[in-house]
Amino acid sequence: MLRISPQSRHTSMSELPHSCPLSGHPHDLPRCPRPARRCPDRGRSAAGATAMSTRGYVAIGIYGGKTASNVGTLWRSAHLYEAALIFTVGARYRHQSSDTPHTPLHTPLMHFRDVDDLIEHLPDSATLIGVELDPRGTPLGEYCHPQRAVYLLGAEDRGLPQSVLDRCHDLIQIESARPQSMNVAVAGSILLHHRHAKGARQLTSGRAPATTPLTGDMQ
Image (cartoon, rainbow, N blue to C red; front, top):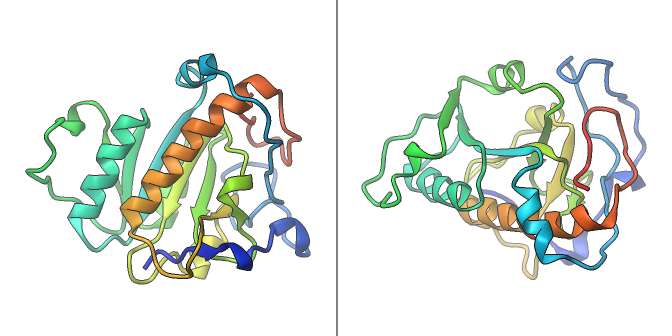
């Protein structure tokens, strides 16, 4: 179950004490979430959406996914929003006959044994972002997406375990009107759309305040 935050339950990471500073190298372990990455909401430019596709990259994946159909649906959304790749952690994917756009020809899929394997192979300066209901998570509507982002969603029934959340650089939660679970592929599609739409605004509104030197923000 991917647990989604109702709007009334928001608590930002900036409101909580921080006792676990990140180590010097972006992939050193253990790691803990950074302070909330928030962006001003300014006017958008139509040219920004085109420019965004030339800056940075995005990868998105599912930890311990249970159904191949969810991976297939997320894969198709990743292709539509020009993600560099998608991935699974701890579970493999079998091709679905419903994949009419032949997504594997355009958007690769990678498999990692566990979260350690994923972190070991993160690209330089990539930000690992956990998507889960967690008091440290920034609401998606207020989140400033980094240029080089790797989003990790939890399984449909269990979400992301605490041990995995503690390894992420950032945590975000998706607002909803009701505190009910959301299908993981739907959640991933919402996330990708938000990055695409908000990226257009960020590209024309200047740099948001940086929280660490790990990665740049969309600008």
